[in-house]
Amino acid sequence: MNKIMTLLTFFIFIFGFSQTHRFIYEVNYKKDSTENNLTKEYYHLDINPKETLFYDRTFFESDSIIKSNPNGGFPAPNMNNIVLHKKGTKLFEDYEFIGWDVIKRASEPEQSWTLTDEKKKLGNLEIQKAVSNWGGRKWTAWFAKEIPFSEGPQKFHGLPGLIVILEDERHNYSFKLVNSRNYSKTNSIDFFQNIFPRSLFLDEAKYKKFKLNFYEDPLAYAKNGRIEITSENKLALDDGTIVTPDNIREVTLIQQKRIKKYYNPIELDNAIHYP
Image 1 (tube, rainbow, N blue to C red):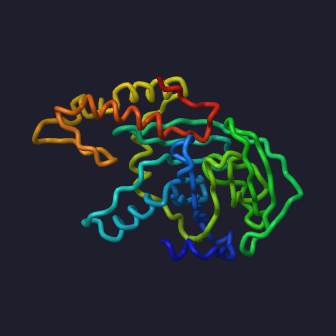
Image 2: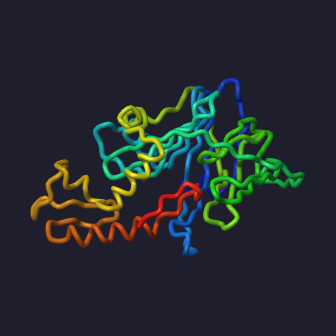
Image 3: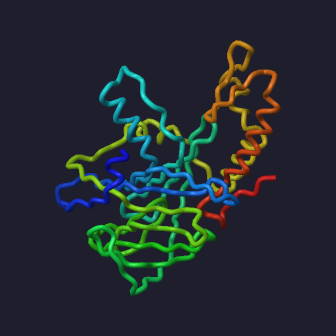
């Protein structure tokens, strides 16, 4: 992975023969907006015939290992959001992992872009600057007309070319295109085909209530019959914390602090206000 990310290479696109155009972004973001620490991850933007998907690269890595060795072990993907944009519509679907549930939301985000005359080179691409105020943040995007897709990272879209660089004014989020791939057949992620049909759809009001309920008891899913926590049967959380009958209250308080500390949503104007 490091080798392909150290060299910025864009391939000549054979648009007529490719079913999946995959664009790989380096994403740097602040989990805690009050600190300067940045977390770096890689995301895929897959533009398929029927939809566009934006997701953490570890989903692809796990899926590839499973397909090559169905009976072997595989690394668990990072449980981050998956964004799906249905082609030919304004509809975006957001899939989020909360506890042991997959929550689905739907929205029609619209960014009002102001194009500038400023241009520069990124590798062998000429890119142009555009700005927008969206989601409670001021964004600067650089797009490439040479890549004729009106798409970009996350829910950003609507420019006359692919968004290759995107950053908010306060440097909480930064996306940069670092590589690309083309596939003659649609390159699907089997994991998504399994979880999408089993997701729970919530409108915004119910979603916020669900998140607040999860904050009030972040271990509820482990106490409602899905798993029994005993001295012999302990629960291991994603952060490595081991839950036992004796430390449930303590772990609950720690998890609540983590939820508040590492809550830095892209859409600030739709943020949840935790107590």
